[in-house]
Amino acid sequence: MPNVPLLSIILFTPLAGGLLLLCVPRAQEGAIKWLANLVTAAGVLVSLPLWFQFDSDQTAYQFVERARWIPSVGAEYFLGVDGLSALLILMTTLMGFIAVLSSWTAIQDRVKEYYVCLLVLQTGMIGAFVALDFLLFFLFWEVMLVPMYFLIGIWGSDRRLYSAIKFFLYTLVGSVVMLLGILALYFHYHAVTGVYTFDITQYQQQAMPYDLQWWVFLALFLGFAIKVPMFPFHTWLPDAHTDAPTAGSVILAAVLLKMGTYGFLRFSLPILPEATRAFVPMMATLSIIGIVYGALVAMAQHDWKRLVAYSSVSHMAMVVLGMFTLNSVGITGSIVQQLNHGISTGALFLIVGIVYERRHTREIAEYGGLSKVMPVYATVFLVMTMSSIGLPALNGFIGELLILQGTFLANKLWAAVAASGVVLGAAYMLWLYQRTMFGKVENPKNEGLKDLNAREIALFVPLIALALWIGLYPAPFLRRLDTSVARVVARVTPAARPAQAAKAPDCDRPAPVETTMAAFVEAPCADGATPAPGVPTPAGEGVH
Image 1 (cartoon, rainbow, N blue to C red):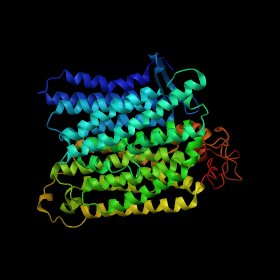
Image 2: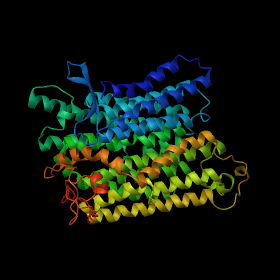
Image 3: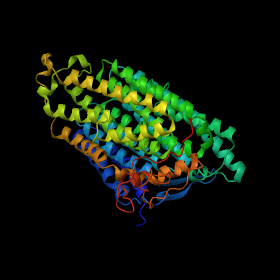
Image 4: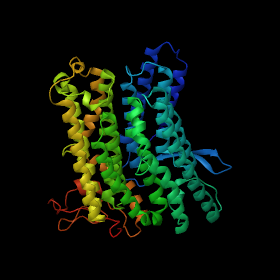
């Protein structure tokens, strides 16, 4: 592989585009829009090697870049990716391009500043996914906060200032407490080794006293739980989603919420394994409450966008539940469902934004019978609705299936209650579709609504393609996650044996723990027969 700083190119492409935009006169709005779209399209192209050149069999971090940054405190410019971060970066660059393209006609005020904020936000999100130095990660984590605050506070709707401040304060409180946890890890590592470093890979290999792990887990938990957001730290999310511009809601749902779940997988589980096992009951309880609560509150909403926002609370709680099953099936399903949520919920916010741009209202009661006047729109909405509720052959089904499998293996009661969230999710999404798309066009304002134009159709084409691809053939995605999941499971469950991806499943019994998810899905038996039904034995079995 050529010695090209690929991750730095991916990281700084949107920032370079933002700097270029500063040189464009404010009055040339057309040039600003074209340049912003070209920059995010370039961001997608430069990130594609993460898919085509990524080695699924390699256990170490890939595309690593390392340089001295602040040697006096042991901080480095240390970048690298594994399967988890590579997939999240690809989703970030794609959703960034879609968010910018969706803003073409939606934003008419302070256009230049708007696109600069979006591009700076893109850099912050990518930086958090590629950083392997904890201080560098925290820097990018904080960078994301400022442009999103301005996106909500300047270009949002009615209560934008209230929602922006609420988002800022919630996230800032979590970030400050998380920083204390990072410093605790930093000074403990120095006390043990005599070396000051923020190297995440070193933290993931050290053994820490349980008491220290317990407190650090809580510190990191607050920062990550607010970002997810988990119950009861979720209250900022519906307000932020409701008042954010469409592109802000898309980025918030598709990428920013994943920062919390990524943090758990990258830091909490592998660095604090004993504390993680101790907090499993609490995490499972909060997740199950979030699944049911988010779904029930979504059913009671009158605002179209607020309903989708509360659906995110329920879906992200399902993601966290799968993660804390501590077995390979649940963790793999959790990661896949993060991608699925980005695809389906990002698309749903685009759908709401398109009709809001035409009617300037999100009240569900104001609509009805839109399928008669906007048939293409109704078709896209139907596909993404089915994706969100987990219809077989679409992406949501794969993630929910793996999470429920992993949860069932960890605790059957958890799985039974979590499964109710799938039913409730179908209820509120189908009810929303029925109220807005079916029936008579009783409101005269809806009779002349225009269907999707070519630009708006282009927004959904990649999302629908991904929904079908993951739903019909998820093996390429699962294969890229094997080593990442195996690394986490090996740390959090010491009894787990190393993954043996090359070993074919035994055709006379269920696949053993060392069988990776991708091998289990697609590997043939040694004699060509079909493997016996079953799922991999959970590494975290017995943790209840």
